[in-house]
Length: 367
Image 1 (cartoon, rainbow, N blue to C red):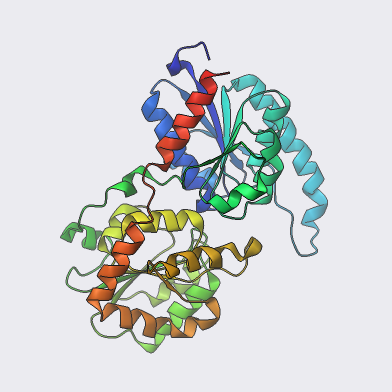
Image 2: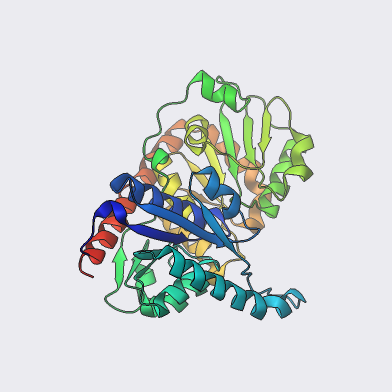
């Protein structure tokens, strides 16, 4: 591409959950680091969490009225064709007005109308797939994408040969270096430095099953000397906030995950691919509770891959009544925690974001 690098323009889309948003933000940050004068704009779905998270991160975002198909019979599905047509038209107008050099998608239905339209206009598109089993959006877009950045080898079988580049998942830059926790870190979360911390992560939107199990544990009484940092998710915060006490700190969403990982001794988490990439960098012992409500049960496959390497404990959602005992057993065995931390850190791919941006820039230079 014969132009000054600082005049690059990028459109990035990915949303609905943190698993799509955080990789998109990581790629944007790396592009901005390489090309400080580049213009970077996001596209999301109106009413979804990216419309709040992306501006907080310093990037402008355009919302499309696109919505996902409701699996159950719903009147909302009747509006889907109109929302899709409106989103395609709005994406077309944005692409014409902004004139991007490249459009990057990290999954989620907001990226479908944008990248699909960009491909018809001959604009280079790139997609990033977090899971071993791709989402429907990326499968639709794959045929006309220039490159597909995959986190797992297994994803290659679902995409056109020759386009897949194995990179790992992009992670937030601040998670690549997690200094030891300070007293100020504990204080910021309302925790005691002298007591072990169990961090509960049900995903950015929260997990009904995990929250219910943790609530039962808290109501029955935590063992002495244990405290919780409990992210309920925005949807569940009001339901459980009354359970907060001096050893249970409850938040809808953890903004400073770097410091949260620093204070945690044990982490209980879902097993989304992006989350696992960040947990590997944190290097803390993890109990994984995969969601059974995802395509091809890929969270269970993710969790089993980690458990088979001694990098995590796999606890199926159907066995959440065993969560307190599993946590307490792990807290009582320092050697097991240390060994698990070492094993999970071996699975980290801290250079994934740089690899993706290297490939995009190299490909654009050949345009």
